[in-house]
Image (cartoon, rainbow, N blue to C red; front, side, top):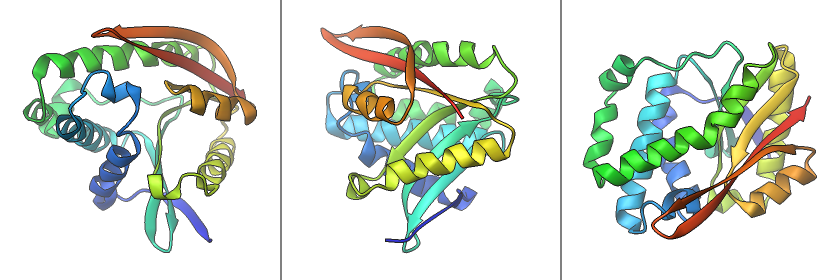
Length: 209
């Protein structure tokens, strides 16, 4: 299996959002807020698609391909990353996410997502060479094949080539947490989120590159 790594093209944003929707379908990160599969998939796709569109020129969007097919994607934010202003989100169709599902649950999810990412965002401000990975998705068809591990190795190379010395991100999956710890990441913040009687863990991790 030959894996090719490189930048994600703007024309591939929709494919990346479809991949992420498949990959995150059974994650507590979404299922606790959107138990109905059809609503969950609509919301997942809409949020990811419009997030990528609004910030495409501001972040580093990477892809892994096998035989020309995208099997993994990631968004990396450099130390000088600035989130797109609210107007840019609106112009890129962000308000359409509210057509995908219940408005209150969407707002509750967005508030949780902001809180879950806060430790990493605050930590990134403590040094000039800290990068943040805001997403990593591996297509279910490619999970367990080594694509994820090789993709993370590519991240680390990509970041070092641009002067980065640390990488931070968070996960809400205990299984994924164990995987990252084995790859040399350490937990620097741990918290939980409760919603409708369901509890979810959230772990922020960092690694010296």
